[in-house]
Length: 87
Image (cartoon, rainbow, N blue to C red; front, top):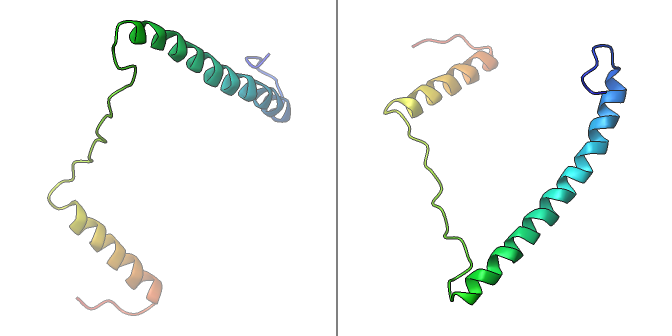
């Protein structure tokens, strides 16, 4: 029904809202059930049933990226101040 060509937007929104709740419910219950099932063999084998922490990836910045951001901010401030720019 969502793939019809002539479906109204309000009908589509209602259908999507109706699908959202069951999907979130399935995610939480199924994932928790699988984790519980996986913990049992780990405990039987004396293995730690936890995941290691993953380091957050850092954004690589170019050497002049901050400078370009500052130039843009200065330009916006000057443009909004309605003063002549002399530089």
